[in-house]
Length: 306
Ligand code: GDP
Figure (cartoon, rainbow, N blue to C red):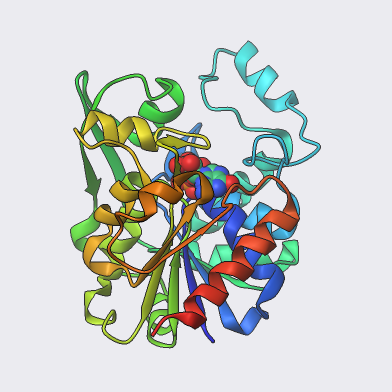
């Protein structure tokens, strides 16, 4: 079975890693959100791509889920001393990624080429693709005006109230090299437990999956557990947009796309209200084994669907 996983950052990376522990490289492609990408200190930064690649490579910081393990912060401390903006933390090891990515992009390589080369260097065997080689930038409209995503997410700690989202550049963005082929050869798509609004919606908007879904199973794993997120602002976003955050709201969000959904055992009562096939299981991935177990159960669930 050829599987496509759609992922944002930390939540998506964990399930993608679980799938990568089970599926051979030729059977798994991970398509990653680039709406969070931005330019900072003159560097081209792709936070979700890096989180997924570092996680698959075993290089990710196990405590934060983002950034590198065994990181040091000498460059950041010295940048701060020189008066550079310090609201976005970039560790020394991580900086090497951004420096080299920026050099290559400025020399004319595409983001998918750079990602392929970096994955080879890090020993990532499965295919990781950015959703697009063209810039798409998530803009968050808030009660304090429109903010670029990282300004809202990191600089303002998600404090402004969300009113809507806009994906700048979307109308002219094409799927990255290899993405269309990966969709065409996929038997099933797993929407990882990533933020539906700002991690998955931009990917879905670039992919235009509607013409494929008649022959594909599409399964989402809910990032909302008992009305809350494990981490990040997804539940706050649902609430501020007037929707009660829940696994049911996630199912409704992806409405016409889904063949089935995986929700947490804490939502077993709520699951009875979901009108599509639903797997109820423990979806909290605390360990590497949890990732593989959830991936395995999700694959079995897909296999059981008509
Ligand atoms: P970000 O771009 O780093 O914020 O990461 P994502 O969009 O991939 O992930 C954020 C979402 O992942 C949040 O809504 C979390 O609730 C969800 N998440 C993180 N870890 C887990 C987990 O172990 N299980 C589940 N079900 N969701 C998770």
